[in-house]
Image (cartoon, rainbow, N blue to C red):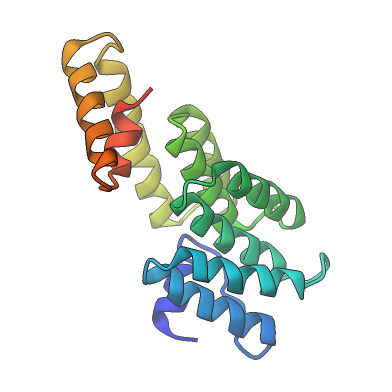
Length: 180
């Protein structure tokens, strides 16, 4: 498995091996996701998941990886469903907690996103990536509470973000901070 593929299970957890057909599909999907080709990645993830039984230890990672692509496509309900399923199958699947957190952050539910990251950190206490993500979200949450929702500057920023979206520009960091 390539270093990029290992890093893309990204956010913690073990990458499935490429010896199985499902593992190979997952690796291909990870590469597609890293290249921003999330729809194509979803096809690979869907096939890997369809060919994997609930008892297979790789399934939670496949679900969590697919959830990351779904979040990138702003299909948040589907992403959350994958994360919940992955967490039920393997409560220690850190990747699922991170994807779940990311989906909540995109919905501007920063408190819930932080709770999920803290749950993940309780399972893997020395994970510097999780610690950093928590620090970033805490900063986002602090910014969120510093600017009142009816503040004219905040309203102007919301209009700017809407205009950017209309131009086809993605700006998830602005969305998390500024959109209600």
